[in-house]
Length: 472
Image (cartoon, rainbow, N blue to C red; front, top):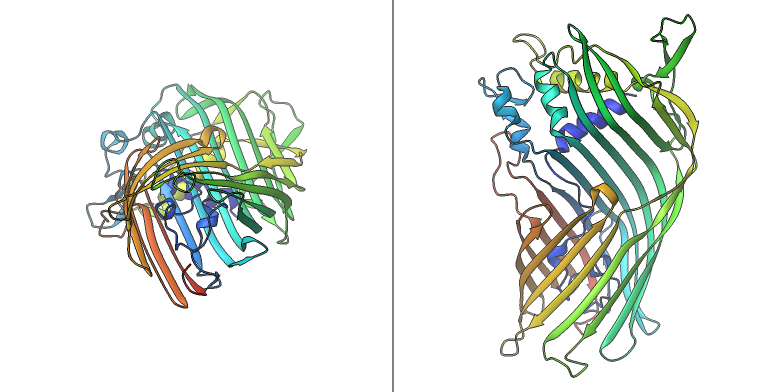
């Protein structure tokens, strides 16, 4: 199984954005949004309850970052789609839009089962979801090297790539503590499917001869999954010419012998709402806050690989600069790049290092104001902060929301923060017995003729549920 090749190929595709594990923030202030508890577990629901359509109840995918996909993919002179590595794309053109550091985060969420109901003095909700979070961070010098590979020394710095995929089973409850103050929480059992974490610090390449470099780096790779093995090793001589060989990880031989649960963990969502109008303080004003995904997964089959010694010989990206008539396809370009990346990181098996790994937590703080003269229109401010080490980010979002009919609500919003600016929208139709919503926090404005979005970020969410009971 070409595990690392697939990971690195995905990295190339997604490096133009940054994965925000994300619910639909545009719907944060909608009362009739069935999945409001995923944004803030203190939120109530305006009907007696709902049942989500299995697998189609709530689907969310998000991509946001500081480099547009159009800067990775190019239309070649013959009309086909190629990457920035293709020889018809000049180095100046290919590299002009890369920043000093590229960060990527991709989050996917699919709710398999979900429902909610009013009982036991409050509102209760249950969900089973499949979630995945991928992150990648690399400096400009990595892309410069891959594109040009000149005979010179390179000081690349730090590269980091990671992925975690897990199944989440959650049960939550919210209730009023006083007439104006409401609290809620969710307990979630996490079943880890797979995890990968690759890091390289102080990565340097010193020219040692024609098309040959001496690489130094502090590199390590962790991979966690039930039945995961490195497979057969490469056998290589030591750099000093010693007769005794050593084994290095052969990436294409990585394999998972049997699927299953690779780790178990727990997480919590906490939330609160304070209605200032009901408290007699300010008419039309409500404050809220939530802390999501505060938890960890303890993995029970984590294999570690580290660089074998302080330096080793690297022969370069042999065919990344493909020639006309040879390796001109996009797949060939990715294959060449990922083959080179595998050769760049020569790692040796260092045994197991099982243990707990934290999820990335998210903090939401909201303020909403309903117009006294027209209570069907309200304005909101939502501050969202992702707490995830090198992949942390912050965003503020201003929104205007309207619910002209009991069964119809929607809004538009504008976001700004660490990942740049964005426009979003949401529409929620929740008639008796049926509800459908759609929205985007980052609008896809343009596409290339091959269907690639040309913007630097996008996300989309859609879902179907079946509410029961009349509007409250």
